[in-house]
Image (cartoon, rainbow, N blue to C red; front, top):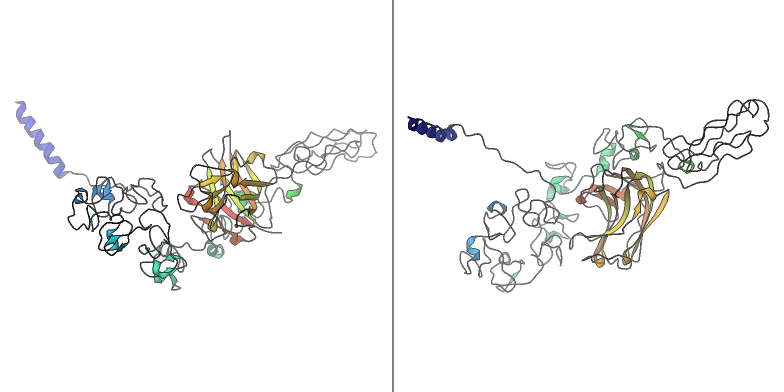
Amino acid sequence: MRAPFVFIALVLLTLVPLCCTPPKFRFEPERDGTCSDSRINGPETDLDCGGGDCKKCELDRACKFDQDCANGSCHLGRCQARHCADDEINDGETDVDCGGTECAGCDPGGICETSADCRQKLCSDGKCLRTTCGDTQTNGEETDLNCGGSQCPPCQEGQHCLQSGDCSNGLCISGICRTDRCRNGTMDPGEEGIDCGPACFMECDPLAACGDGKVSLGETGKDCGGMVCRPCPDGEPCTFATDCDSGYCDTVCGQDPCPDPSACGGAGGAGGAGGAPVEPTGGTETGGTEAGGSGGMSETGGSMPVEGGEDSGGTSGGTPPMGGAATGGAATGGAATGGAGTGGATGGAPPTGPLTTCPGCARLTVPLASTSTRANFVIFIGNTLSFADATVTARIYKASGQGGSVKLYVQHSGSPDYAQLFGNPGILLDDMVGWETLTFNVGTYDAPSYNKSIVARVGIQITGDPGTEWESTVVYVDSITVTGASAGPWTFDGASSVGAKGTSAPNGVMFLNDGDSPIEGAQLGWLGGS
């Protein structure tokens, strides 16, 4: 009796998928921004291609599956047809297993009909010639990766160029292959502003939004705050102290507790105690009304004043002195008028705390949260230089921060690999008091495979270092100078000396390099004044 039931069950199991198949969903992986960084990373199978997220790979690029390849065929780990690995000349090949439309290009010396048949993209008199057009590096006469110049194929839209002949569409605008609509003076589809935005492969000038009468483009208040626009006046919303004119932020910009930085102490050290009372001068005069230097954290320091009593010059020993830089700051700490002493030592360490004005400073903000937190602020030199005998110096000021460090570095520019050489260990934020000079003698540092003769960038990194706790860091950079190489100096005399977050900026302009994965919330701004 069990057999009929088994048969019916099998029939039902067969029919259910036919009538009740659930809808198909396709998982779309989140793009991680690695598809244009000239590195093999993320899910990519080859340089900026494959893996299901980036564009499909061209012939001879590495692959794992057919869908990684533009020709839809992955064979023996390469984008190629099966006949491209049979040791014969067939199916359109121009030489053994190379050339044609389905196989990789032939090596130099191979037979070719057109340059497309060659791995290095140059065919002359039926032979593939040696060039730099297929080595996954920007070199030789190329204006971008394996394109441009007199030997390589023209570049596509969005790639760098020097002249119109470097571009497939014959139009080089401001060093980038673009379309003609990117210079017509109108805002076309795909543009975020006039002749700028994704469709033109050019970011719109963020400063244009600093006068539009609304909160936009990372501003914290209306036309103020954030990385680009001017600091905000009191009452406007803020995120960091650097968003405010006053240098003081408590969800909104408010009164600066330290309007005169030169009179402020450090982190609230103890003020001096009042002097010992002597014979009263009579009356009810109050002793010790002078306050010590105001502490950087606005913490009250110093000992409570000595009660004067009616016999020692008043009914009270005076106002408790505010804590200066460990010894009462620049002012004397709580001296009683009726006492014989001066009430604490004068002087003390250089001030820290927010700056309200600067002759011209880049303002670097990094919300440190762990040892892996970092942000790189970098300047393009304009061409590659030898830094073998160079020394880089920066004049910097810590407004706030602990549990991290500030380092100078020099960097290659895409060739061969954006390698960085750091001036370790830099300077610890905990050790910084007032203005400091940070020096990196590049000639005394070495690293495996680092070529000091092709430096194209100079930068500053703020990073979290081992510690028990961290604090949001604000560092001002007054200048960066270079000796021993023809670069700089950079003095940040105007707001145009700093740019927005991105992967590039005009030569000599500092920018926050988001190609190096900075911590969220890192900012770059500018502070000026008298």
